[in-house]
Length: 68
Image 1 (tube, rainbow, N blue to C red):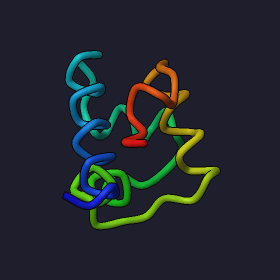
Image 2: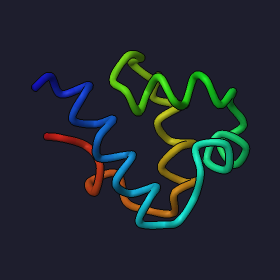
Image 3: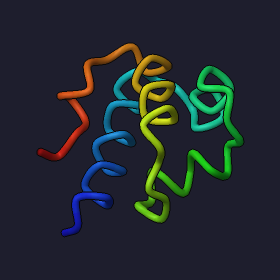
């Protein structure tokens, strides 16, 4: 599995653990929900800025979702 897909899966697990919807994360991270959903599916390679916003929105450490 590509690291991009693994990252997306890890985000999904973290989001569900936090009992948040994709829309809630997208709103907190100030991005469009479709963009966030594509990241979770492994279809987007987020910028460092987007990654930082998502991690902060989830309230977790980057090491919890980065596959390396």
